[in-house]
Length: 326
Image (tube, rainbow, N blue to C red; front, side):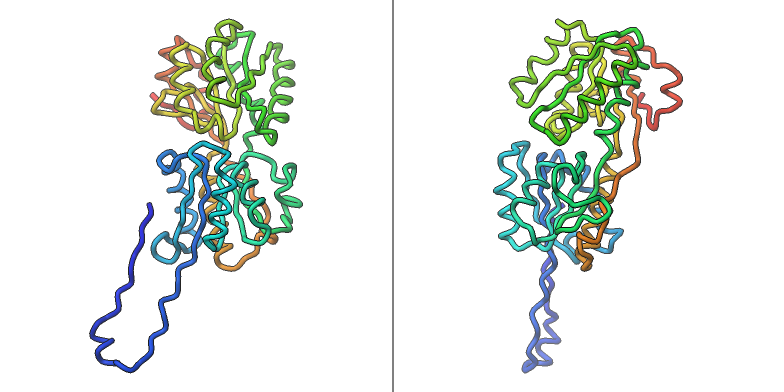
């Protein structure tokens, strides 16, 4: 993914024109990619970011260079990494997540920046409005906050006899937490369900989640969006299967046999961010590029996991699924 090429001078031409002064090869523009997940975990999504770049006319190693910085799931590293990219004099910063976008905004108010996130960029002060961002920042948002209540409805449809449901939420991710918990509680009330919000923001707290679910006799678990849970999707899916707890999340981790997901297509969001990055490299100003919303929403159901949990998936859900894993 990190390709570099040297352009060779043609020896014969140099010999034929010994007194001609040659201009130095123009440096390629540089994208500073600021991510939260490890490079290995981000690799599948980076491929779709590169696809968007290609659509805009740019290819890594050919007419653009990408400098990658990863916080390795440690949010505290993001400010220093953002400052490092600014000092590296990149042409644009690509911030993949809400924490990364906030770190980039704190590091520079002039260098163009493109974000991809699940939060509302207006509410957290990144842009003036979705239609006219007004500063040095624009990007792509997902719909995951708005559709978290829908996850509860889908999980209820999957396991209609469960009356107690838990919501896993990160209270430190304030851009997501309040809207998510409010929406899920309202949806639970309309469905006649009892919902328990489980606040988790550290790995030590995550270890206690599933034993607590058993204690509460929760019939299922709705997982909120946000980088903390997204970066631990494999762990969550594997543990849920071990404890036999049906879950629904923004994304299904196929390797860990997640049961069900309902959320914005993250691959589409990354592709759109790639397109916008290319447009900024061509000279368009973030202030003039409306924030895009990735509107492609996918329902994925893993029948293998459903069978392991003893769940018969309703045909109404199978008929609406965008992907069935067997």
